[in-house]
Image (cartoon, rainbow, N blue to C red; front, side, top):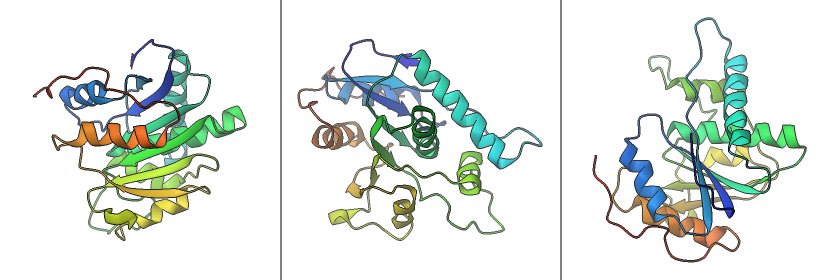
Length: 212
């Protein structure tokens, strides 16, 4: 787990498990200087013989413990991409239960098909996807922002629209490149700046994207 210790608005990040280190590093460099990024480690998938519901609970326990160790107690935003999007949904829902209210003011997800969709019998999805589809999670107070290259004009594609079922608040669909695109870090920073309170400003480290 990596944390930045500047006492500013916390932004919790959950990368896709197969992301190269440079992907997260480039994003951290592009984020507004007024946020405190906290990068969580993705928990492993279900253990042999473990029920999907128990596996989701274990994932939530692990993520919530990392947040506590990082010292994030007040309002924060949360962003997960790829399989990290499902983990972010699980974490936001868990913290609503534990804290009795939503400390997560905004939940950002991208590079992720909406959870709880039917899965073809001849296809086995990633373990984290199976978990969220099996156990289901809904946030009640977090604004949900779903990013996708196909979300043109705020109109989601059919595989994204069901994300609305995972939040009882506003769900917004925004155009966002995939995390493998060189333009992704700057685009994420722009989305965050426009939607989080009081974080307008320059990127924290204006350098060229790292490779590898």
